[in-house]
Amino acid sequence: MDVQDLLENILKKSKDLGTFSLTEALAFAANGHLNVIAVAKEENRQYYLAFLNGEPEGALYVDAEGALFGDNAVVRIRAGRQYVLRDVKPEIIEALVMGCRIFEKVHIRKNITYSVPEIGKKSQGIGVVTLSVRKEKIPQNGVRVSIRKDGKIVGSDVTTGAGEVGFRVMHGDYTCLVQDRSQVVTHFTITFDESHTFHILDL
Image (cartoon, rainbow, N blue to C red; front, side, top):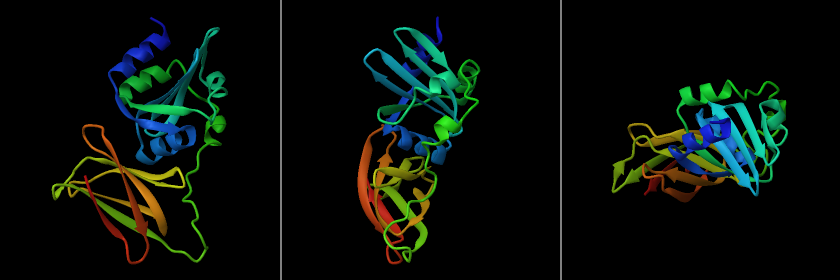
């Protein structure tokens, strides 16, 4: 069994965390310290990017002529296509990365934006917005919440036992994506400023 067959078998048993642009996938994995594999397929080409604790550690590119691994594959993994993120156990990713490790991460890192985007005037504030996820008034523990601005994910975390997450962001309008235990994603729009620091998201 080759590496691609092994990968596909792993991915068949994994959870789908959503579809993202490359920049969003990189930020989503980094902010959540996720162990995931990003997959993109078009015509006869397949792209795989393996993340360990949020860091891009392995890459594989496959086309009709064969496969490229690690740094050689990263050159082919660029922005402009959509990637599906699949949740994979860290020990599996560690074993996979041994055969396709990325050493020159500069090719990937140039696509990552970790900084909080500046919204509007420089005088606008920054602070922590708290989101409370509830279903039928019951706090939802262990639910993944992402917060997005202008199409870019600027934060991602899992709710606490009280059903809450907090993000340090600039004042402004945001889209919140809540993924429940059945993998259903619900979108909410919020405004964050000095008078709106706490929001309840009812599923």
